[in-house]
Length: 310
Image (cartoon, rainbow, N blue to C red; front, top):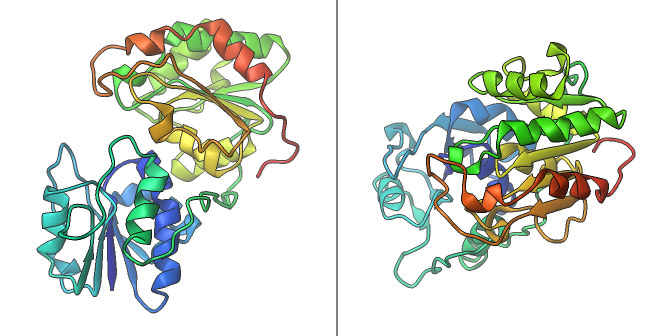
C-alpha cells in the first residue's frame, strides 16, 4: 500500500495531481490511498490518482491519520513541510518515507510554485514527475442549466482576505451580460447568499445563481462547459486550469508565482498588485482591492478564445 497525504482543499488537491500521477506510474502494483477530505473523492476518481480516499482533515497544523493506514510500504507527505504531518505519517511506520525535511533529503524552498514543489520532492527522491500533468478529463455529468458557453463568475474564497468585493464582481457580471454573454454565479451552499447578492446587483435572474445547487462534480461540469471563468485565488481557478477553460484570476495576499496558473498556459490571465499579505486576514487584502473593475474587464477581453470545452 502507498499512502499519500494531502489533507486540504480543492485547489490543494488539483496542484498535487501531477505528483500523484507520478506516484501511480512509479508504483503500479501498490494500492494507492490518498489521505485527504472525503468530499474530494469524486475528483480523485476523475483524475485517476488514487484507488481510495481515507477521510483526513488537517487544519492549522493539527490532524491525524487513520491507524488502518499503518504498515504501508510507502508513505509520501504531499501536505506540507512538517514536522507535524511528517511525524504523523512516520508514526504509521511505512517501509519508505518521502517528505521534506528528512536528513539528507530534499529541502523545502519558500516561494516555490505549489505544483513544482511536490514534483521536485518526488524527483529528488528518485521518482520522475512531470509538473505539466495537470489536466483533468471532462466530468461525466451534464453541466447545470445555463453554464454551457457562459461567463462563470465565482465570487467566493476560503478567507475574506482573498474575496474581491461583491459589488465589483456584480459590475463585471453586469458588463458581461450587457455584452450579450450568458452569466452564471457559482459557489458552495455557504456562499449562496454572496452569489445571490452578486446576481441581484448585476440584474441577473435568480436562475443564474448555481451556488448551493451543485455538488463538486456539478461545479466541475459547470467550469468545463463555461466559455470563461472569472474568480479569485481559490479552487475554481485551479479547476479552470485543469479543465482548460480560459480564466481571469484575481490575486491578493498570495503571489501567483506560488499558486497561479503555470506560465506556460496562455488561456489564463492573472491580476495581482504585487503585494504580499496575510491570506487568512479577516478583511479583503489591500492589494486585492487595488484591482479595479476595468482591469478585470480588460483582462476578459484579452482572453484566448476556445472553441469546444476541454
